[in-house]
Length: 134
Length: 401
Image (cartoon, rainbow over all chains, first blue to last red; front, side):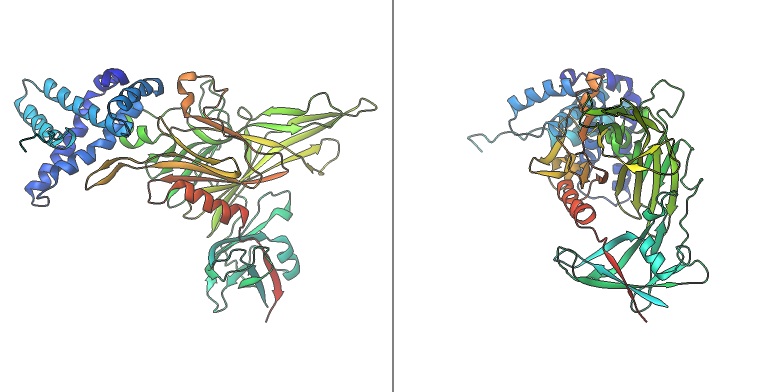
């Protein structure tokens, strides 16, 4: 998806800022948890805080022609879905993978990105479809 | 001496808000100075009021503006029934906050007018260019419209990406980039086209008070030439487009009045109002798929929106909607998106243009919205009704006790 939008270069150019922004949200949620201000809902708040920012990356880093290509793909895969929301979610998943990859060798940072991956996966990845046994 | 001013509500529902009326007839009949008056309710509570000098060379345009403290009772659509009253009296010292032509009133550089209230800041370029670059096509445009720190003309860059990827320098709105002035029936061309995007404006007046700010600007003169059909002689008029930008305190819209004044350079002082049609140009990023609310049978207003999105269980929309609404009393022709003449194709999806029908004076409204529960479509239609179509603008003077 990032290839279709051609925002890989944009993300690379601004990685420092992107990472700082995502880790900042993670830090604030952790602090709130530690101070007892947040018992549940950390994952929801994290994703909801980050999604507009990730949508901003899609809007600013891409352009109309590339968006049209990506939208055609989404329309085929997920008819009736809101293209910007889906693109933002997929871009977010890409950012998490990039974060983990770039954090290799930095254990502390890697742990943060793994925690972020758990938050994101729990909310953005589709639930497993029910099986006949279930 | 107290004078009663009757206000006429043309709506079938109770209405309050801004009232505007020409000051000159009231000033002449009462002898009250625009700098020394107060408006009161029947219980003698002061009402925010001001007199604006719209064009220093034409006092017939001086305007009294005030805010009705209570809703006026419903009235008749033809403005034939007074439904509220306020009371005017002179005071010794100027009690109404003075509103006068101010050279240094607006904040900012002399090449720019920046008007601001508690919600919105609109930064208007008087010069074609604000720097030494060769980009000289910004005259008469709002190059920045801000809600707090969020730049509405480039929301994604300013709100979510912040400073690390600057705004699109092409962004602007409210720009009258071209005028079409009809030619006489015997002329070879039907209209004279005048480009205004590269023609500087000068500020004529800036008035401020407890109700609103009003700023009048005029384009540098250009020539309009008519040929005498029998003798071949030329009539040359020096013309300027006048634009008054009105910004109510706490409003998120700007009301604009436009008219075209022509002067015969040989006849001093006299001027004539000319027919014209203005074309508006906007460069504003409203997402990849902006929603356009425009109805062919309703040429009075339209709205453009980047819809809110990212519906999220338990959290609602994560991405706020925002948009721009336009309304006019002279009807707007077809909205063109993208603007077909925009030279940079890759960015043309951020451009919009539309033309007004020919008129001698136009009153337009530019509404800006960021977030909020109400749809911009509804808000623009309502603003058109209350501010453009049926404004509270009929006030009659009665002599009271």
